Length: 167
Image (cartoon, rainbow, N blue to C red; front, side, top):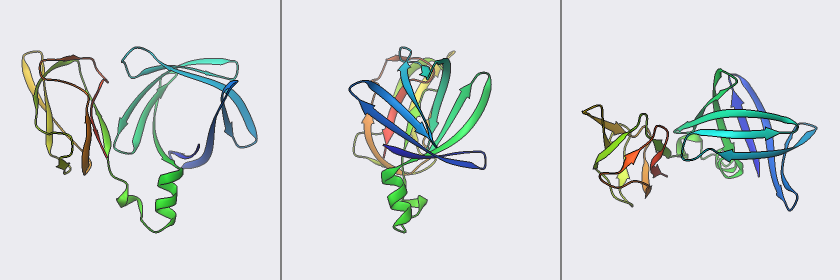
């Protein structure tokens, strides 16, 4: 699968290939073996790229990935082949909807205001978390349709845990 990645004002193409021998990542003329494993249900991943090991924290907000690597934070915009074809066909990025809503803090789910199949608009409240005896209404930042609800009422969640998928 090919991806176009933009970090700051720099764009590059990244290709990820799954083979029987494992995963390989190609960037430019360089190809390296890779292994990416999520640590529990946290937003932290163990990444082995070539002969180097990294701990990476990733949060997705709309189409932007907030990545923390070696103590530095980066905002990365990533488009897969499907998204690139939409943009090339004149669909424009405005047609790219959706987000994965993650818990910004540990807490207890005390409200779910949507159901699978509901249409949502930016700024609409979708989940309420109770943390430190305060209720926090979480609002989506993108328009779309609720594809999945990954939590239940009364469930405890950790920071970064996926709550709702909107496409």
